[in-house]
Length: 565
Image 1 (cartoon, rainbow, N blue to C red):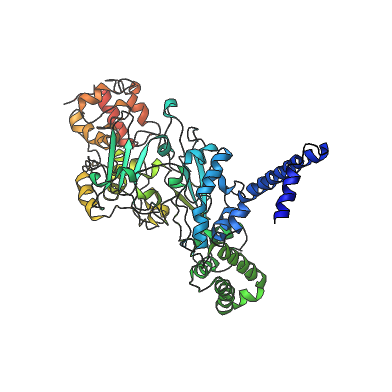
Image 2 (cartoon, rainbow, N blue to C red):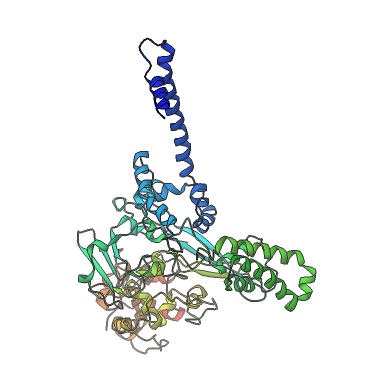
C-alpha cells in the first residue's frame, strides 16, 4: 500500500527536474477524467430524467407509465411536471429531496396505490405551456356512446364547452377557466381533495365570500388557514396525464374506433361485465376475459360465433389490452384507485364545490348551473338527422338567475317555460323535448347535493312565486277595449321576461310601465298599431308569440286609443 501511495505521489507530483511531458501528464489525466465524469454524469442525468427511467426502473410505476404513454402529455418528460422546469441546480436539489422515495422503496414503507403527494405549483408546470390569461373560445364536443342493449345502439351527446379564461382587464375572465383568473382558496379534509367543506372567493373589491357545506357541520372559524389550498390547473386536471378510463368509456372508445365491431350482439354490456369482474391476479383476468367472451357467444349466439370467430378473437384482444393497461392488482391500481376531478359523474369532480349545498351567508350556493361550463347536452340517436343545441342568447327570466335554479327548476315548471323550450314529458329521458333530456335525467348525479336534507327547507323558501295562470281565450267584448278589460290578462304571459326582469328595459305588468316603453323607446303608439313596436315584434319571430286572435285584440286596443280604463 505504501508503494502504491508513493507511485501516485510521484505521478501527480513529479520532481522539478522531470521532463516536461511527465509534469504535464498528471494534469492531462485529471482533465480527461473530469471530462469523462461530466459526460457520464450528463448522460446519467438525462437518463434519470427520462420517462423510461421513471416508468420502468421501479416496480411501483407500471400503472402510471402505461397511462402516461397514451396521454396528451406523452411527449413531456415526467420531471417537467414532478420537478418543474428550472435551473439545473434547483432541479438537482429537488431530486435530492426526493431521496425519501428511494428510502421508502428500500424499506418498503410505501403504500399502494402510489399517489403524488407533493406536486409543483401549476404556475411552474402547466402554465409554462398553457397560459390561463389566453382566452379560449367556446368549442363543440361530441361524446360517442353505445347502449347496453343487444344492438349496442349508438348515440351522440353534443355540448358546447365554455372554456373561457382570459384577463378581466380585457373584459374576459369567464367560463371554466374563471377559476384560474380569480383567487379561490379551499379546505380539503382528505388527501385526494375529494371532500371540500369550505371555499373562499376573493372578490374584485377586496372582500371575500365564504361558502360552507351545510351538511359538513364545519364552521368558518374551524378552518385552519395553514390547510387552505389555492385552486389551480391541477385542482381539476389532476389525472390528465395518468387517466385510466372507466370500463364503459373504454368500451365506447373501442367500438367507436372500429377495434370492435359494433354489430357484435351485446358486446358493450358483456365487455363492461368482464372488465369489471373481480379476479385474483392479472393473468386470471386476462384468461377470464378470453374464456368469458368465447363461452358467452358459444352459449347465447352460437350461429354468430360460428360465422364470426375472427371478430370475437379481435374483440378479446382489444378488451384484454384495455384490462392489461388499466388493472394492476399488485399495485392496487385501476380505474377506481385515483379519482378524476375533470367532470362530475364517476367522481365528485365539479360537485366537490358546485353541489348546491355550499352556501354563503345569504344562503346562496356556489352556483350549480350547467350553462356556466357548457351548454345543456343534447342526445341524438341514429334516427336523428339533425341535433339542435339550445344556446341562451336573450334576456333570461329572473328565476333562471337564482344561484339555486338547478335545484329549484324541478318544482318550478309552469306554462311560462314553453315560451322558450319544448316541455313535453318533463323529467323524462326520451329526448322528446328540452325537459326530457336523457343526458340530464338519464343519469344518477349521486355527487350533487340537491337532495340533502338541510337543503330542502332552503330551496322551499326560495321557490319563485307561481305565475299568473294562462289567460283564457279572449271573449268578445261589447264595450270599448281597455288595458284593464282586454290587455292586462293577455300581457301577463309576457311578464316572465318583461316583468321585474324588464328585458330590454320593458316592463308590461302595469299600464304606466307599458306606456313608458323600453330602452329603445315607446312600444305603443296610440291609434296607430302599424307604427307600434310591440306589434312589429309580435308579428315576427319572438320568444313568445301571440296567437292570431290575441294579436288582433292588441291592434284593436291600440287603434282605439290604447286607453287604460
